[in-house]
Image (cartoon, rainbow, N blue to C red; front, side):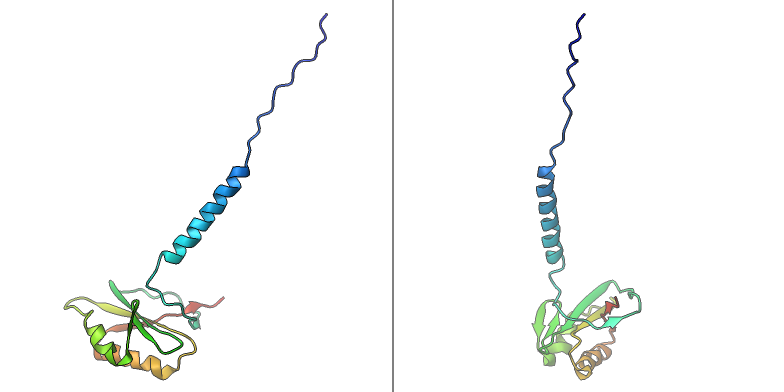
Length: 134
C-alpha cells in the first residue's frame, strides 16, 4: 500500500501592492483635474446662506470682487469705472444675461451696490453667490 501524502494544491494569491500605487495616482489625477476644471474662478471667501441654488439663465457672466476691491469680469480684471461699458459689451439683442456676483465677505456693502446699480442700468438679472451653511 502506498500511503504517500497527496500533494497539496498551490493556493492562488493576488498581489495587491500595485493597486495602492494605482489608487494614489487616480486620486492625484482627480485632485488636479478638479482644480483645473473651472479656471475662471477667483478664490473668495463667500458669505453663507441657507437657501437653495438659483436657476440661471442661458448666458451667465461672472463678476467677482476681491478683498482688495479688485473687480473681475469672468477672469479679466476691470476697473470699477469701466464696469458699465465692459458689461455692455456682453449684451446682445434677444439674449437673457444673468450676472453671478461673487463678493468676498470682507467687502463693504457699498462696493456691492455699485455692481448692482450697473446691473439695474443695463436691466440685467443679478444673483449673489453664497456658500451653503455647514
